[in-house]
Structure formats: structure tokens, C-alpha cells
Length: 482
Image 1 (cartoon, rainbow, N blue to C red):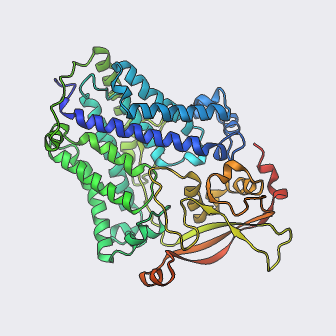
Image 2: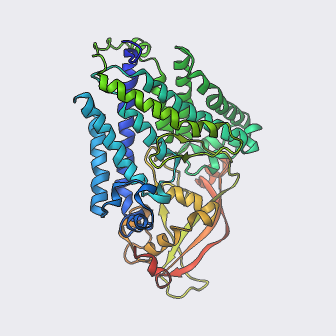
């Protein structure tokens, strides 16, 4: 196919694009179902207030021109429908230029959401999805073979993602260097999954093997991505296996799944097709001249923008999960440079009593994903992202993380806001809102095997201190208004 395209990667591209579109669909769905309480007109951090304060050039988004909850819902649901259509093959059923426009539209719509999402969208996997989405625009469809420059850019992205995460660990918490971080991590990670209790109780020597394997996956295998096949394919496959281990052990939204998707184009599709017994790919047309020019220009642009994240990798003061431009085009990544040894959780409670006494009955709100009642097994939510539950983990680490949104959240509980209550698993006040709400900080530990057998409880918790004293609507009513 020449120097520009490589037909042997047709299967890898097919899997990559369909899976990426599925992640886009999940991201848009999460935005559609959660935005009203988080960033809607009457949300905790309203978009209208944000765009009045931050100009378009500081955070490009179509919502700078107009905003309403109906428009936001249209963007989110429209993005979900478009993504689902691409999963079903719509982008392969249209000409190349139309396919590229579909991918560009998904990127622009999600960028518009992320850039007004504020704290709720301050996660590294938002930038990762957007950067991956820009490369998908250039990868073509079934009408032409995958362009070699974009295949290499995807490997460069995977290298930065994994190698950056590996370096931030080795430069950070000492437990990564002495192989003890996973003594704690399965218990203290932001949102444990249904198997996290069992992972935590693996023998400690196996935890050390887990940690060492993580270093191999993040510091050795990324380098092998730039070696000839089949070595690069085997490196990508081993990275996929390590990501599946992380999928099983916790809930990290779509981070692990997206990493798996990005690793797929490094796999030799022709070899994989032979192993799977798939038919030979169809004869693909030569790439149009305009397409070659666009890909080469974009590749040059990515290489220029790569200076900042590349320099960051080899800087002692390495930063992680940082975008060097407002379009999230070429970013710095990393995760868990330090590990929390003790798990803290904020429990939010309400009461119908007008006067607080020693006999006041407090009833606890239930969250969908974060630990709550000790007898409730953590659920599997990833790749879906529960934004409130994730921020509650940060709130337990330090009240500073909760400063912009926690009191508005409490105010909406006191007002009985329906959109906010939909973010929760259990509302203990279905008839009328509580008169007072308070928050308490607990230390959580996984129970032992014996405790689980005798009590049926997955957690034990100990009260640490008051997090928020009882407050009524009269004290926070102003926070309900946008």
C-alpha cells in the first residue's frame, strides 16, 4: 500500500474505532443523565455562571454562545446517538470525508461539555478521550487503509499515557519503589468494585508481584511499542492484560477501557486475523491526496505540541493529567503518584427533627458507587462515571477539594431537588426534605475473612469527627439559586 498506508492494520483500526465510539457513547450518556444537578442552570456549579466568568478563549465551548438545559441535553443525547451510530458502522457506510466529519463532531461536542464541566470534569480520562478522538478523525474508515503516521501517533499517545504513569510512581510515593503500595491501594482507591475486597486479601507477596508487574507494564513495555512486529504486538497485548486486571480490581470510569482501546492499533491486525481465522481484508483504495496532506499536516502539529508533554516526562517536577492547551490535543498523563494508606469516607445524614437533641434520629443518604453501609458490597460501575461519588472521595481527603460544591450539594438535599436526588441510590426522606443535614467523617476498613463470615459485612467503619455541623435550609438557601 506504500509508505503512507498499511492495510495489515485494517482489523486493528476497525476494533479501535468501534470501541472508541462506544466509550464516547458512555461519556455522552453520563453527561446527559447527570448534568442538571452538577452544572445545569440550577446545578451546583452552573454553566451560565461559569461562562460569564471565563471567556471563550479560556475554555472553548459552544455554550459560550448560548446555554440552556435543553440545549445541553440536546448536545449530550445527540452525541450519544451519533456515537451509537458509529458503533453500528455508520462511519464506514459514508465517504471518507463524511466519516471524518462525524468523528470531528463527536470531538467538538464532547469538548464543549468538558470545557464547561469545571470540577466535575477535572479527570485525566476526559483529556485522554478528547486526544484519542482527534486521532480517530484522521484514521480513516473502511474506504482506505489506515495511515501509518496516525498509527505511530497512537503508539506515542499510549507511550505517554503508560510511561508517564510509571515515572510519576517511581518519583512519588516510596511504596512504589519498595513494592508495598498494593498493601493499601485496593482498600483505599477512589471507588472499589465488587472484587476489590478479594484483591485486598491476596497474600502480601502477591501484592508485591502486582506492583512489580505494574512497573514492567508502565516502564518497559511502552518502549517496546516502537520495536518491530511481533514484539510491539506482544507488548500491547501484555499492556491490555494488565489493564483488564485493573478493570477487575476497581472502578476507574473509562480510563482502563480507553487504555485498552488505544493499545489495539499497535497489534498487527493481519496476524490477529490469521489467528482468528478471519477472511482476508478487501482491496482498499489509495488514499486521496487531500487526505494525505491533512494527515501529514496534523502529524506535524502533534509533533510540535509534543514538546511540552515530552519535556514533562523527563522533568523532576513532573506533573500528571495536565492539558497544555484548551483543546486537549497533546496532554500529560499519570495516576497515583502517591497512595492513601487510610480510607476516609464522608457520610451525609438528615433529620426531620426541628430541634437537635441527644435523641435526634439521623438517617443516612445512600450513594450509588462510594462505600456506605458496611454490609453493602461495592458495585461495578466502570466504564460509566459517577461524578458525584468520585468527588466525595476527594472530599474525604480534604475539605478543600469540596469547597466549591459540597455546600451547594447539601443545600439541594435540604430543598429536595429532584435532579440531585437522582444522583443518589437512596433518599431516606421520600415524602418531604429533611429539616437539617449534617456530614460525618468515618474511617473505613475492609473486614477480615472471619468478620465477613460472622457478620456478613464487607466494611467496618469508625467515626473520626464531624465533617459538617447540622445546617438548615435557611443557612444555605442562597446556594440553591444559580
